[in-house]
Length: 482
Image (tube, rainbow, N blue to C red):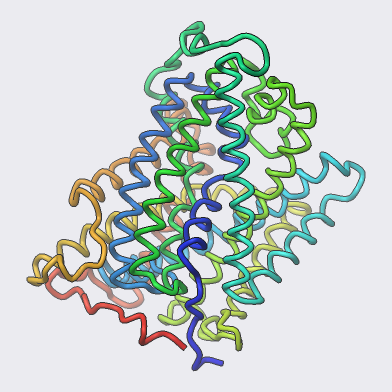
């Protein structure tokens, strides 16, 4: 069982849809309305464009490393190899924790969505059914995960395209009454509302919406042709995500004034006032709420499916490097890290039960995972900057790289700066009032990451790896094939 290797069967279409599926979800279908409500149409567009550009640079950074070193659990490996083993240890556990908790949040959300149709059925039943389905998809094979994610993501993409077509027809007055044009962009205090602090808070919302795009790095170790698939997927995914988010927010902002109370919904339980539902209703589609509920259900299951995959692969990778119990590195006969899957499922299940029986513990776990995605992005930026600098110092030619990140060193430096800005701006209001409880809840991820980092550093006496000593041995895909 341990002699086997992970199965390299994911194709380009799988990689593209996995990254799309990770980032198009309730953040777009529901929370985008609250972003417009908070900072106006101009502020929401500026925040999503800014975060979108940063994500593009992050993905090209990740792409350069992932084509050179296509391994499962990439972030932790790159952080250990190009920065400091303690940094990689903290990065790996940080990312695993993030997705294991998110898995519990998503299966809880499935129950909220199902209450729309079946309000009298106990919610835990829906959550358990969702968890069993997701576990089965991930346990069968990596290809079953890729196919499931492909089709669920396709539903979301089709929904966004239909929404954009209907939205633009409504703006022009071809559907749903008279043309509105851009009148809501100059309504009241629009397009920008609330100044810089408000804009920064929307950057945080936008950042959470885009999280999941980094899944391309996790899938590199199970891609059939990473040197071709990853660059292609990055190019496709970036433009699709940016266009989908920017155009969707533009359509919502045109059709619904930022002062509308209907834009304040921020969770899947607010389906009736999802901006997408409102726009479809305005165009005269009577069953809009029910259709959007089905799409949001697909989105949440897709996000949980991606979360299960990402956290399982990260735990498997860490075990292989001695940073987690060794039995998590075992694979079953189909090349699936089954014990890592069981471990992640158990944590997701315990977290889910804590949401029912111990709400304080659940709130603590949720707060603790809040900024972990941004910390992972920071790790990607730092790792890539040092990787490329080591490449130069060791006299290697850039021609050895199968894919080149755009605008180095601006890309990783810009990504690093924006991530720091978003992390600091997570809850500025609590600093203004010196509300220590709110500060500790909002920023809990940072001390947890530092504790992991210092624990490993003190125990193993690790140091920042000098650039001249960084291991730049390329990874041969053929060596790892079964």
